[in-house]
Image 1 (spheres, rainbow, N blue to C red):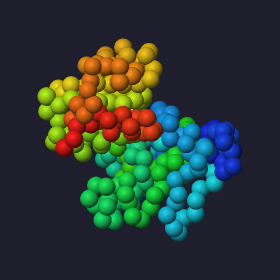
Image 2: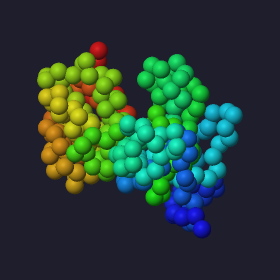
Image 3: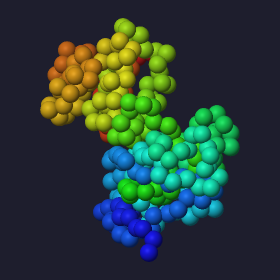
Amino acid sequence: MSPTQSAYGYIAGQKQIQQFDNIPIPTPTGKQVLLKVEAAGLCLSDPHVLIAGPIESKPPMTNATKFVMGHEIAGSICAVGNDLKNHHLYKKGGRFALQIAKACGECEACRQGDDSNCTVTSQAYGLNEDGGFQQYLLVSNLRTLLPIPDGVSYEVAAVTTDSVLTPFHAIQKVKHLIQPTTKILVQGCGGLGLNAVQILKNYNCYIVATDVKPQLKDLALEYGANEYHTDLSKSSHEPMSFDLIFDFVGIQPTFDTSEKYIKVR
């Protein structure tokens, strides 16, 4: 009897995550690798998938109705296909995180490094096809494998693919505007916001963090915020006084705050 595993994922019409039992552990062939999942992050996108459904697939693929969830993934190679037996990079025991988007690597967007806007496919681990909420994951698109540096844990590598990369991408877009005198507002001190604070601290700018939860104050200050407020309107900051604002909440009240406190350019 072939070895099996358990997994958790999405079934169309169900609003709760589903447990899958007795799933066969695949054997890699050709240029495939079998990744032993060592860490898989839980993201707010996961309940969004359960409530609203998976990312739409591009034709000719049809929209997914059942798949293993989990898109923040890191693990170790436990087996490789025959074509990779002597490959210098994809060796048994190799440590890798997974890029979420299973981009083609050949279209214009991919060739420009914009994998998330691949024009050929919108397939993504854990968001419309099998992801990391299982013990073993078959990887056919080697382009999605990202080597984990020494000294970086599987847990850190897994969440870096999303909850670190998301604020990093936003900050990269405006990094040319950041100076030591720049005053920045970070709204929301969940995973994205706290990672943004840590990234921004490297620019030696002035960081004001906000969240409705008072218990996050110590953590925000520890990670690099200069100030923390649960209600910015009760602080000494004047309207139109922030050079940059990052909104990691994305609801109407935080949008209104951004509109009120951003400087007019």
